[in-house]
Image (tube, rainbow, N blue to C red):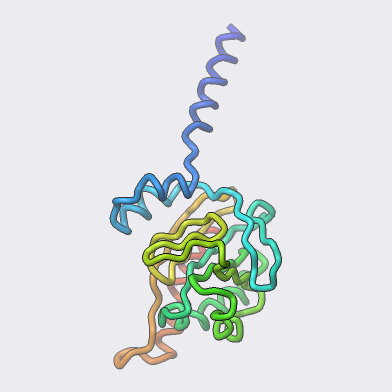
Length: 199
């Protein structure tokens, strides 16, 4: 009887581990999906592999060594919403830096992110595209992390390295929205988003 129970436990646990899907595998298998399907059917509930990002300070940031939840933000210097979300993002870093690691990957090379560096909280790890990274229209591959959505996109990853949620876009000033309204709207969205990993 003990042998049967042991065998059953091995079979069940093997099935559980075999079902773990990793982010890049999920993204690549969903190449022809819409953005919403890519997020809801492929990215959510997948797991982050280890990535060794090279920061703007030329430091290696290994996701394997990060023990907190991660907010990984894909950004581009030419995107107004990316720049527009900076005040709200800085507010989140001020409030949650001890509970969440903030990493921002860029479409741009190191010399093109200075405008962001000057405005962003210094506790955000900035990862510019390097010469060996693939930066193409509709596709960004930073140190092996493939991003196929728009800018900005924030990926929320829990302590177990599981993708919990994805947030796309940000408010920007317009004729109908002042900077104060934009900052309040972006901060509210970030607060709701990040609350999913705050204990």
